[in-house]
Image (cartoon, rainbow, N blue to C red; front, top):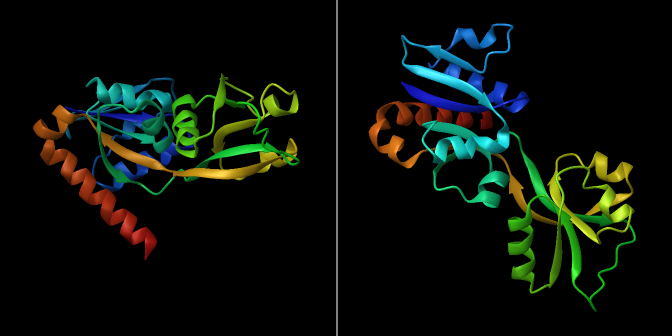
Length: 210
């Protein structure tokens, strides 16, 4: 049985359609219920829905053989997995944002609000800038408005939320997109199935770019 971790939400639905095109159908996934695990015993596959930020943990620990995770998660948590392919979907950017009138207070540590603490630390270390990390889990945009932080480091897709809160992108750190990842042992022992999926994903990506 090949175990596949899918991120809940619109991204997961897009990803499942790619698996379906690759010949790994599981009709039960369309049933209107709250089940999280779906099997196609005939094809020897099992899908399960998990929180997007948890996909890499399931794959790293071997509960899933393969899965799809955002590059932001891979950069932040650095799981011990193989990153096989950039699916070129779920595209956005990791960026530094601040108030429209932001001016870097160079005489002191820059206060940075983020839930991506490792990404922020590495970025500012490369800049040689001393920072004070403020770890937040939600509504990060209000931190500069209330004076809690100077800037934020967060995922930016359209920038609408930033604009509505009088914030703007100061610097883009890295582009983000969904990646196919594999458990290292599974990649060795279930290589034939995984390579078939990988080959189909590459074909689908090339066809989409034509």
